[in-house]
Length: 67
Image 1 (cartoon, rainbow, N blue to C red):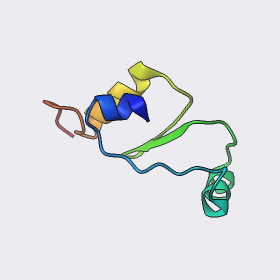
Image 2: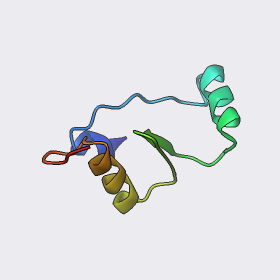
Image 3: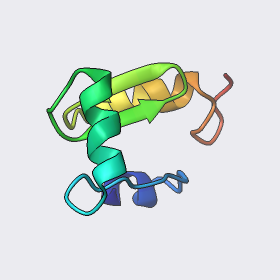
Image 4: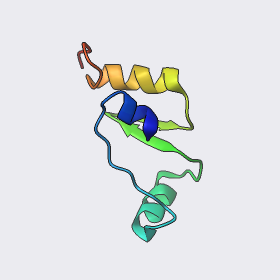
């Protein structure tokens, strides 16, 4: 979450340790790997800054990017 905060990207954190609903949503996605980021129509698993930046850019969420 710090990565997105540093870039000024708004996000909603869902904590599976604190929210049974969040855990159920994760299970329905068919993954138990963390973190999972939903950016536009992309679902990213794990922390990969290059993939995150590409998805943010494609969704128009980085300064100077166009969806």
